[in-house]
Length: 338
Image 1 (cartoon, rainbow, N blue to C red):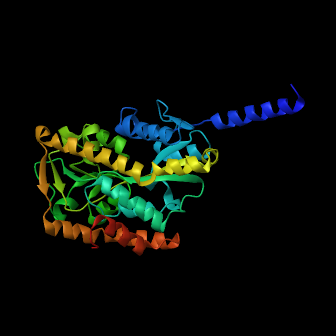
Image 2: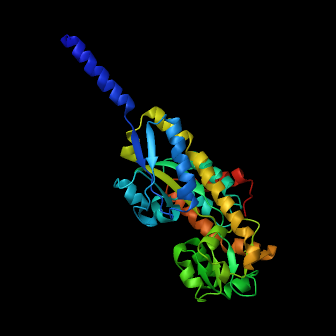
Image 3: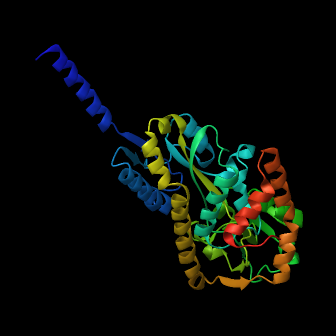
């Protein structure tokens, strides 16, 4: 074999090796491994990634989260994992835009529709907000609701202000404090510890599937159903920037084609199904569903307005046209301003 033939052979071998090179993504999931986010939504997404990249990009989910929920971003930045999901309320002032979906009485009861609306709003108004990682998707889960642990439903401002409530930290806790409620606040995963002991006589902020999965139904007597979403939590999905850069531009485009609003809608649809299943169990659990008095909903909407005003100020400081983003998000859902 001539020297030229040897060189040509080596060049072919290198080319073939490069063509067959694969990128494997370690996709972290902080929920329990049995949770549908870890057991269904993310695995299905990984399968789609493998399909659209023809196997050049694969993924795996570790059996246990590599870091606690508040440290998902740090884990990705340090390369401990390649992809993660994080509650947008844990980013502090670094991420402001997706809080638009978490404002009181802005959303509706359809997590899939809210997820699509949030991604559309992101693309239009705050697509460049993440600067240390590659943003892949954002989504919204089923709304948190108001629950009573006594025979008396909570259906007026007086009834709410007169209660001692377990409340999800953040805007809802601030609203409850402003109204004069006694507030015990903490992470959702610790809700059972407080609520089951009878320390409070109502709770605010958990969505139906959380009430079921955290085994709170035996301690809940009724829920007040508002026409709009009192509160809905939003999340972001993102990848390590260096790992993302390993992927060819063509495969990056293919991956984004099954991420963005597609992945967001999948998360939202899963939460819709889980909420529907949980609500179907209310009857057997003895939980009464009470439609909110319109006067109560109007008063609570007005009383929580300071949360929206505060977000608009933070959005402006972050260089986001908050008023336009809020109007756009509402328009995507067909909800009107308050």
